[in-house]
Every structure is written in structure tokens, then in C-alpha cells.
Length: 229
Image: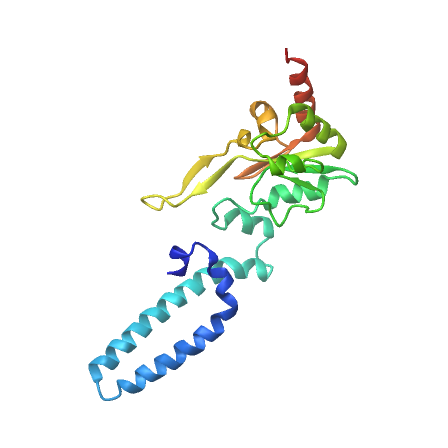
């Protein structure tokens, strides 16, 4: 109920769950005592509790089969993230590639959102927010020019670019997995090089994103600037 009526804010209620559980236990105990002399009511109550217990047991069991193998070292982290159901993925493989191949003094541009926990944090320009683009944060409709993007790429020594390729959607009429293609041009930075992405060979790729050479993208944008009238 909380999930559907309060989006995912239920996670913020977790700290008070023990209190709710205590009240629920007291209420169940009182209901059990009140039905001591009413056999049909007690059977109905026991049946309801049994259904809820089975439902919760299935929930815990399913998640245990997913989480325990990697926790016990029976499954690699890469295989777990590749097989675990998700809406967009944790971008584990591509983030691992960025972590391993980013040299000291280099940064990367991350267009995938939300920004993955597994990607480097301090060396990222998330969703095109390079240092010095505070004006664009305050006035996003004005955007950032091609010249400013090129300057930021060079100043930050942007070696890698992570780009979303697609995502999963299950919020449809039949709750079936629907693959939706991502559009890098929707980013106010990605729109300057989105048209060259199909012609580039990704350095790494997973189900939902790809990693490209930042120097190749920079060269493309410089050539694009020369073509301007």
C-alpha cells in the first residue's frame, strides 16, 4: 500500500518498522485472545495469518535465492548484476571498466542516470555538470554551447564517456518487460555528439549502457565546430 500510494518513500519508514511490528504483534495477540470462544473467527484469523506468512516467506525466499549466492561467494559480482532483475541496471560492468582504465588526472563524463554507486564518484562529471557550469544549472533552458562543452572536455581531460543505451519498463498493462531505447541527445551535453555514437565502437558495453573514448568524441565535436557556417 505504501509503495503504490507513496511511490518509493516507504524506504524512509524503515527505521520505524520495529515499532509498527510491535504494535502489530500486540494487536494480533489481542485478536487471538478475543476469539478464544469463537471457533470460526479464530479459524478465519489463523487462515489470514497463514496466508500473510506464506506470502512473506515467498518474498524472503525469492530474494534469498538472488542475494545469498554472491554474498556467500558462490556467484561473481558481474554475474549477479548481469542476471538480477532490474529496471535499468547497476551499470556494474561498465563502471568497473571505468574504474580500471581511468588514469590519474583523467575524468569521465557520466550521462547514465541515476549515477551508479559502482562508478568512480570524485572523478565524474555527472550528466554533463562540469565544473564552471553553475550558470547552466540555474538556467537549464539556456543550455551550454558547443564551444563551452569542448572547453570543458579539454580542461577536465575527459577520457571516457558513459552513455545510456536502453532501459527496461514493466509499468505497462501486462507487466511485461519492455525495452526502451535511450536517447543521449536528451542530455544538454549529449546532444552535441549523440549523432556520432552509432558510428563509434564502444570500449565496453552492457545491457543498458556503453563506454566510449572521450578523445574520439572530442575530436568529433571539434570537427563539427569547424563545419559551422
